[in-house]
Each structure stands twice: as structure tokens, then as C-alpha cells.
Length: 252
Image 1 (tube, rainbow, N blue to C red):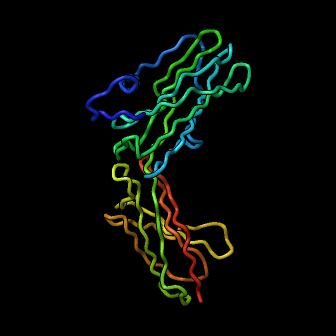
Image 2: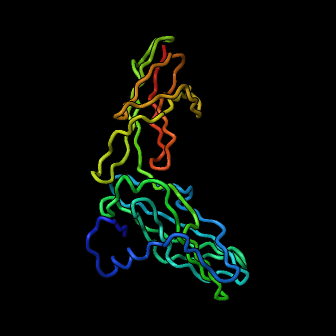
Image 3: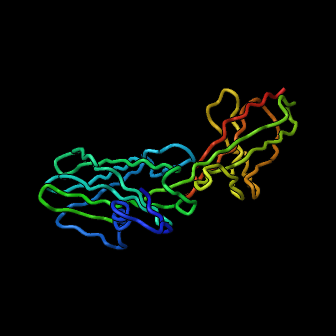
């Protein structure tokens, strides 16, 4: 469960969770146990929307000359006192000295008291025990982006259009507001207008467009051949990347 600094009273397991936040620069260990790789959700990016729990998978690979015995629950922590803890990891042997330990945690914006300030770079705190009583603890064994999910729309008009005429392409970029549990405009962001010719599987960027303060997008381009137009947002540390569903335009 995530702990907020603004919670005035805590008791029992909740209070113990708050005390479990790793102290800065508290790495430690004994012997030759080392953490060699940390992966969160496959690509080290976790996007959270406004409804429903998201299961986040954490994998930590470690090595020791005697082999790996077990791992303690991983703590995930980030801005604004954000913290989540996984269940007990399951360790899978890679070879005689190396194992990958995997665990998961469910994060639900409806119950975990998330705020926009929680978005950004998060870290994984990991404790690994070896078979010969060696161990390693790294407060920041790996990092990942904890992001607000985004949505992107597009509409190209007129449809159909005569070859060589001007198309107006509009849309909007929004992202999850974890406090209101709604999506709100994400303003002043650069978004690419892309085009995919009919029969092709690849989009090509035509130009960069900047959203207004409310996340609204509007630009023009010349119609040349049949195909799909879409907006594409690359994302950043706090907000997930997203592509609009292409809008097909018939050029006559």
C-alpha cells in the first residue's frame, strides 16, 4: 500500500510500511553477491490510468559463487513519498551462480492515494540472499518511469478530399488525473503528425505540432494520396507515450 506524508494517523502494518521506506545511501552486503539486472514491466515503464488495478512485475537478476537462495519483497519508491511493495519473489535458476527473482504488486489509482506529483522516476530497492549466507541490499538497484496514462485523438477533414487540397487535422492530448480519476488536457506538448500511405504498414512523420494550453491540437497538410493520418506523442518520464488511432482519408 502506498503511504502519503499527508496521512495524519497510522497504526499496525500501515505504520510499519511507512517505516520501511529505504534510507538514502543505505546500500549494504556481505561477500560476493551482486545484482546484475533489474527490469520493471518489461520496458521499465509503468503507465497507470484512472480505473482498475494494474499489475506491475519486477524481475531482479543476481549472482553469487554459491548460487542464490532467495529475495525479500521488493520496495518501489518515488517522488512525493510514493511507495509500493511486492509480494514474496520467486527465484528461478539461470545457472549455478545466477538466478532471476520475480514478484509483482497491484497498483489501483482508486485506492492507492496517487497524486500527479508521484509521476516520474521511481527506484527498486532489492535484498538478495545467497546460499552461503552472503547477501546484497541496494536501495536503488534499478529505476523505471512511473507514468500517467495518456490518450490521443485525431480527425482529418474534409473526407473525401480532392488531390492537392488542404486537410485540417485536429485532435487532443489528455492524461490521467489520479486525484479526480478523470483524463484532463495535457497542454503545451509537442506531438508529431504522421501519415501512412494506403497499403503500407509504416507511418512517416510530416511535422511537429504543439498542443495549446488545454491539450488541443490543430494543423493543416496537403492531401496527396489515400492513407491514414494520426498524432503521435513520444511520452516523457511522467506521462506515457501514445498514438492516436489513424483516421483514413480518401483522396480523389
